Image (cartoon, rainbow, N blue to C red; front, side, top):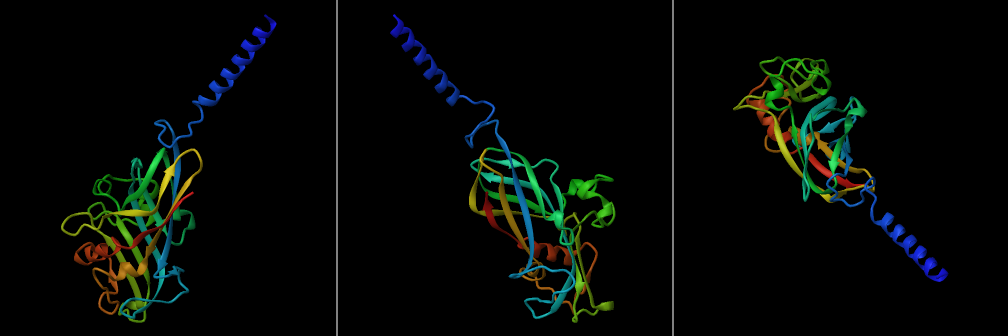
Length: 257
């Protein structure tokens, strides 16, 4: 009888261990757990061709041979989504990337559901609804110097600097792309394929690196010559042409833990 009791107790202990191993509702481990979420960090690097963008001190050259320096490079990123086997849409999704402010070069996507993702979709600029929504805060605060008026809205991208080819006073180049109304709207939504699929799960925080190329802002679909167009500070056909260029300025260069 004593041996049987010992066997029963041993079996109960094994069942208890197995049960604890199989069930741990506080720590989901599978990427498809419907209740599991994590963060994905999105990081931006600004480039001029193969070179890192350095403000004020570095000379660069356009595709047409115009030399130039950059003193300011800012742009809005909004309406961020991740796609793949799973999907995610960021709420209140407005970010201002400013080359002169390193803390603005990255932001975290919060509460991303566990799953697999292979694309990121985003808008360069600010959607039409927010252009007419009255005074706003955060990235959309007019104090950020990326806003014209309530009739013309936000500046989607701002590129400033100097060039010997510029015919403007002080040889400045001033490209402010704005306007949210057709036929010359300047918001551009793009979908980038990630260089590798990411799995959002309990095992760590994924990073997505995106590069923005200033040279592609100045040439591509349309080529801008500083001797002809040194300054652009109003909505219209030229701003739309610049937007058609910067629609192709982004590329995803890394994705993973």
